[in-house]
Length: 171
Ligand code: AR6
Image (cartoon, rainbow, N blue to C red; front, side, top):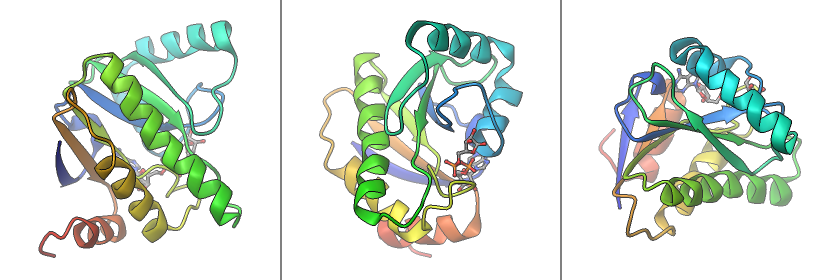
């Protein structure tokens, strides 16, 4: 599995699946969630509503999939990151679950390329350095015969620098 870093907007990335840092309602929000629904159009929210009706809320650390509407991707995988409250052990495990469950779901869909945002590092206030380490560790230890490339999409300079260091890229 190749790992890449891109600085920018995840809604513009040409991959089979992009991951959304959603909330448990699955009904949209701000940050990357808002950007994905804005750029992707109403079909994504429509499918989120169907999932809500079928299974109720999405638990923290879990993932569900919808279409990607007008986005270049085929799928949006919505995962719910933990809100940082300082319980490092519990919240780190939940964040790791987001990456693991998104990758598992992607595999089941035959996804070859997938892009992740920096889950929980915005409104949910997870410390960026720790979140980056968890994300990179989880992806590296996930061996896949199906997924060929994982792209970390960093929106802000701080995350970009953190990921460059973690992935051993030249700053
Ligand atoms: N492309 C890539 N990354 C982005 C984009 C974008 N277009 N926009 C923001 N980011 P956040 P959370 C980065 O707050 O912390 C929503 O309201 C941003 O710089 O989007 O998991 C949901 O509905 C940050 O590094 O998600 C939930 O209620 C990262 O995405 C809640 O926020 C995550 O920031 C989830 O909070």
